[in-house]
Image (cartoon, rainbow, N blue to C red; front, side, top):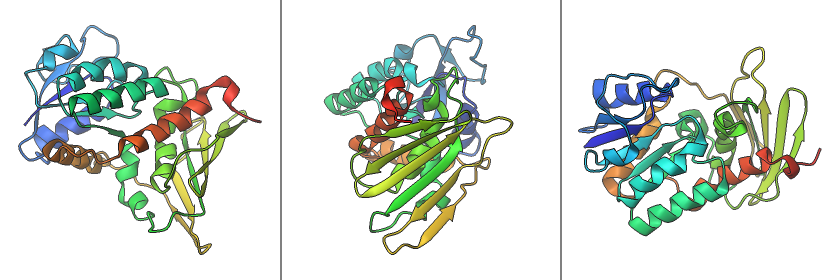
Length: 274
């Protein structure tokens, strides 16, 4: 199985190459080509053949991982690949606008090309262990976020605590209410029958650790602090390669949209109450 990458800015690329080409955890999957512009300030030489355009990967590979840091670039890069029928993993976040996310999902459905995207944290065992048969009464997630990030503001890192929380809930995201302080953004919304609170803290002087707290229907409380070790991307990559082989996305498309909608409400200046 031949895999292509789009973009080399992210350190996630190093994990993916190690997973596929060095440790061969993806079975017969190998990353064989990269679409990037080596002269760009943020692009890196990762020791793989380079093509100058995303479209040049079509015919060279069987599936693609889009790894641009800025989610605003994802739709433009994923759409021609989906139109060619290729399975695509879009590294987090799927998009920084609901319109871009919906465009990718429409293309995936129209062309029968499986699409997925997620924060790697949703697949970590510490998070999966908190999934219950009944939706919880309340979920609170915390993580670092730089609202001034050049890679899409709150979307770049905010997707992590938001997806941790939403992974444990069912149903649509209701109205998101946002309070901003000097160092933090607190976003609250009903999701199905669950009250969700996401606290995003500016990483200064150092990043706050990711943390998750769940209140079950019986009022029991469970907490978790996910561990991001050298292999924290691997469970998500396992899910991607299972999708490539089965054609079945691991995250339903309506669920893909939830984190984008949640963070879009946070990032829009008029969307919060404080």
